[in-house]
Image (cartoon, rainbow, N blue to C red; front, side):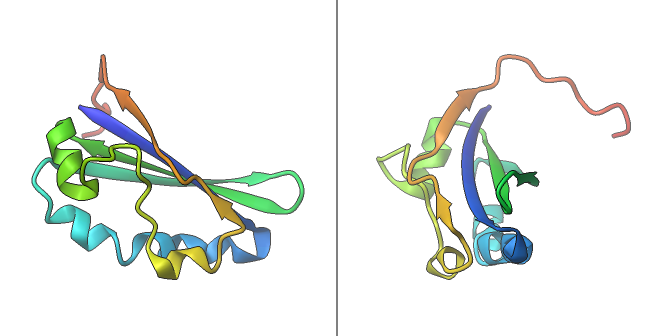
Length: 106
């Protein structure tokens, strides 16, 4: 499994920005072969900002290519998601999962 990590920051007053990030993208992701899931998280930063973390899980690099094309580091940011953000990563980080422990509650 491959995990792609992407981060974005917004003013604390825009803490509701995650729907702008995820709403248009999640239905598209769910239809892609090899897409395994996503984690969306946020944390408060000093200076009145909030940071969003998006971790997408993929079966393989080929599955990721089906989403982003040949540039595997490309961040796909929907135009509607840009407006509420102060800044965001233009590239993603990729990690190969080496061990996984299932959640004990299913």
